[in-house]
Length: 291
Image (spheres, rainbow, N blue to C red):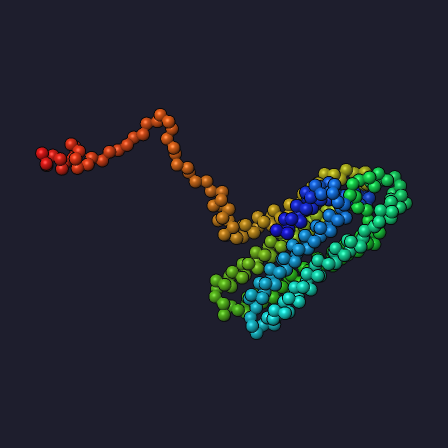
């Protein structure tokens, strides 16, 4: 749910647009006229961070459910609580902190534009525009994002390997049905994350290529396509889940199945009724015997 909310926020509520090659961005969405892009980006970072945290929590719960009592991955509740709290801080704090600290006062923004971009003073008239005046703070956001993605990816791979290890160790104690379920669940989750990562990871690369194009080139079409790819990332993710889950497929098929409605006779139409002769009918053989 948080993934859908974050992408709806990015595409509709915020409608983020980068001003290339100018170091700034603004929104064209429904909330752009009520608050600045500086605040709207913070909201999106929190929503997307909750999505990433949910993915990790699912893996942690799965590892805890399958871990053996004498295994090195079997910990008490206190350890899981501390680990989950630390992981939450690690995912939800660094990026918002870097973005919040990259803000500037209106006076600093005006002086920056007048000094380095004197021919683009009209950009200050855009409602809700955000201009990052410190290049190092913006690079710091990129560095922190790359670091979080790398370390989070390594941690997720480690959790998947731990789950596979526990599944292999319990081949003799668990039934084949339970083992097949855990293996399929892990495989399906990995496929879902890979598909989601492809769509989400393609967007920053395309945005970087778009930023280094000729300043006089029209980047509107490219920006629309890039945002469409990024916003529509939950769609292939959801399609993959539906394709992998038999219960979801049956439910959707049952919802889309149209049953034949009973035909209602029209007014004035002829209805044929077959009459079965009874005991008192003159055509009944019993009536002849009585006569």
